Length: 283
Image (cartoon, rainbow, N blue to C red; front, side, top):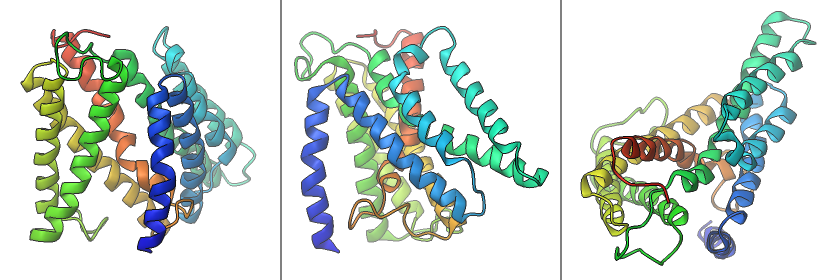
């Protein structure tokens, strides 16, 4: 198992780094591919949970959401996308002979498509990212959009890493044990503290206020934990240990990106709020 994990990491890590360094539009394309693969896993889990939806709608909708993020940021296109998914999901469910089956197909299809479409907030962050201040430690390292994506990634990783380490070391208090028996309050607190500190330091390194970094760190930590638990809830309903087996030793794609499904929109909302109160300017 360890050998598989190391081999998978050795193959995937360089690919992720190269895509990140290449910048837009390659990041957006890479996220769209992840959305396609994750959609397949989500609809597999929904089927195992007794909620078979129209997989094709999800496989089409999620990549479109990611690729169309620039358009979705203007003229109500995001709302139009959500409305279209809900309407198309309903139409696809109409042929079901039993009304209950049709309703379950409608709701599961719309959920599966919109759930993975949350990945669209990753490239969206680059659209609203504050500029890296002149003279700041991270100035010139990457463009503003990618710097803030890096802030998100390192903050989420810090949360996940320290939640695991502190949780294993202290093992104090079960956290939502009916969904994920291995999680503890000590892990949640340890991960949150680490995420807040890491995010605050990185935000300061962009030339933005320390308090803004504390706020973003807390927001990302809470959202990342919620994203992880939400996927655990789906897997538990489906009776599955992993979302898939596409990454040997690591499970499925969804298992690796579950935290980001909630953390990305959380950070996006946080950046919008900070900009609204005068903290940070768009790049």
